Image (cartoon, rainbow, N blue to C red; front, top):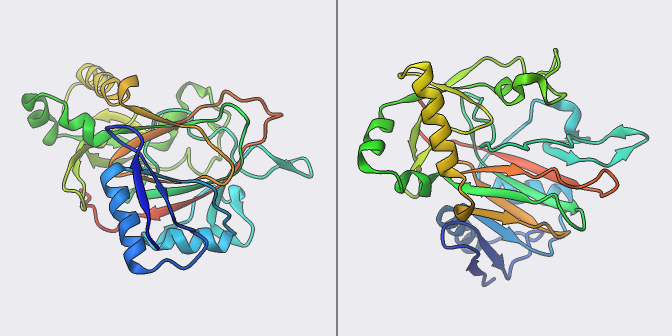
Length: 282
């Protein structure tokens, strides 16, 4: 199978063509796909048709899969698949509908965050419901040397419930298995285990504070870094088509959903989450 990799922006994202993800991929093809992911941080495949088994088989090539703690959002019979959906069945939601409408990297509130995620668009709105991506490697590399030096010695606290501060999100209810998870600590800068690039590892959704500075300094520093990471000129905005499969590298970017579509517009997706077995954790 000969695949073509076409960059979408100069900073991140590439489209990969010439591959059917529902077929068994030989090692050379998979290695080319993984190389594209490491280089571009987000890779897009169009016109795919994946059964749950095929999605799981493809995702597992990157590493072991993680089960999301929100059990009610998992696909029946396939605990590796997390449903992002506003489509109701018998009047009940089939998955989480408004997830991730803030900049974040998946599962940074866990002691071992995820390496990446695979998202498969089954039904998508005609317009709206895009996903935004921004490179945390590019963000670090475009800071001044003194700022880079300072950040490398720092750590930050991450907490899932932080994303729901102020109660704006209905998931901030008591008893939510995520909202009750304890905080964890991660370095502010991590080295990507495959590319060797240094990446910022904070995000607007789950990072509560930078530990070694004062609260006022932490607020100012995080506001600056989050704005620097997500400037419009460095963001890739993915417009979904049915059959799109998007793989992203959580070690090198942040992303967010855009909730600008109406409930009449169906958005039904399957996601797998890949465990990070290589990055050093502190």
